[in-house]
Amino acid sequence: MLDNQRVVILNFGGQYCQLIARRVREAGVYCEVLPCTTPASSLRSSPPIGLILSGSPSSVLAPSAPSADPALLTLGVPTLGICYGMQWMSHHLGGSIEPGALREYGRVSIQLNKNLCALTESIPATTSCWMSHTDLVTHTPPGFSVLASSDNCPIAAISNPSLNLFGVQFHPEVTHTDHGRTLLHNFLYNICGASNSWSMEAFIQRTIPELRTLIGSSRVLLGLSGGVDSAVTAAILSRAIGRQLTCVYVDHGFMREGETSEVLAAFTHNFDLHLIQTDASDLFFSRLKNVTDPELKRKIIGAAFVEVFASEASKLSSLHNIEFLAQGTTYPDVIESGHAAGAAVIKSHHNVGGLPSNIGFNGLIEPLRMLFKDEVRSVGEKLGLPESIVWRQPFPGPGLAIRCLGEVTRDKISIVRSSDAILRDEISKAGLARSIQQYLTVLTGVRSVGVMGDERTYENAIAIRAVTTDDFMTSDWARIPYDVLARVSSRIVNESPHVNRVVYDITTKPPASIEWE
Ligand code: XMP
Image (tube, rainbow, N blue to C red; front, side, top):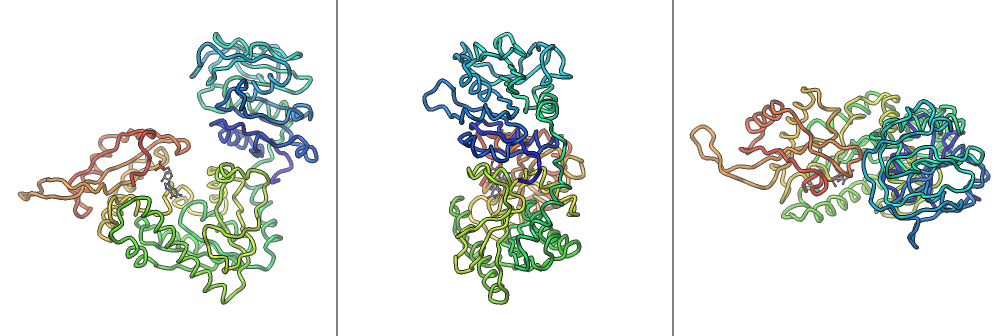
């Protein structure tokens, strides 16, 4: 556990479960997401200060509905059920649930019964909230009162203060619920007695000595990719163990312009660690010759990466005994892999990322495995990483190679690289870098006729892709002002070789993905 106070969120499979966890952390309270099947007995020895039951796409009435251990409701731990969580709680405590006539989806006005509860303190009597449900609680369990109602949902929030059990049919974690943050804050501070102890300073202060104790005088190897997660992992390990950390930076030849030098400069100037850079681009380009299938490209790049990294690791391990491999795993990966329990930064492993077992690491170190992306960024800033690295937009492991449709060659990569650099430059000059979550260019593989001077040309089309998104699972296309697009287009056709056409991708995800590939 990373803090003395912990809230547990039981995951019934709802799409907003991670968002609930982020909101709780933003409120200054440490939380963990555990599977809904977590037995009550496993929480008894070190009970959380609060329990939140998440939403779910299922119906409590369905035979295969996800369920939790009903003994959780008798632990005496303050509990808030959200959507399905409230229905599950009501169902188990003797209330009734029925299918609603219509699915209620979207922003809805609710009326609060103001006399009742610390949960709704400072929230106006009429407020807007986000609903997404079909089933309804039609009778509260014995001992519960109705805290809120809407036109279509007479029981929109319930409470039983003497048992410390609460439920809301709506989603306080989404921004469309006007006072959702206040409601969660009320639950955490008025009801669970949270003390605002979770902060990234506290995380760093706790983690560095923990890493020192775990690692002792052993050596640790880390693959530095240039992405935020591996950079922050390197930064915290460097602060903990200095030159006992060796980072290997594999340049596959598909990095963005200036990226390699920027990453290397950040680490050589500000951090004490042992850094090895290897230019393996010849190997990657030769392996990709004549390969056009996107999935095959990814597989070849992944395998070549492991090969190069393993060869560097075995060169090093013939010189030193390297005990641990570090990785920049973050909490969404941990939750999605279903291994959500426990906050340990270290675990034993047998075969990480396809590395050959004869390299012989004894353990895997994942110092960020309990952090969300925004927390990772904040740790990076506090450890002194430059803004250009901390606020780097997501970049696929196979790099520009997947943004080059068809066969990947050095010439084609240099077209994508130069157009990408122009786009990034203009977005940054226009002050849009933080408001567009990802922006990139694609060499579409389409060639078309154009004119340049008096000459007919037959050259490449570059596509610009720019999206706004909260979670990269869904996205909208960014409304970049026309004059910014005009500058980008004019610079790309003038400055990038062999391009005579620029198009703007105006597709949402779904149905399109963010990358083209
Ligand atoms: P798609 O194209 O699936 O991408 O909409 C969603 C997000 O994932 C990023 N992405 C990757 N990130 N390794 C990564 O770390 C990868 O191989 C990879 N492929 C896609 C993509 O850039 C977008 O942010």
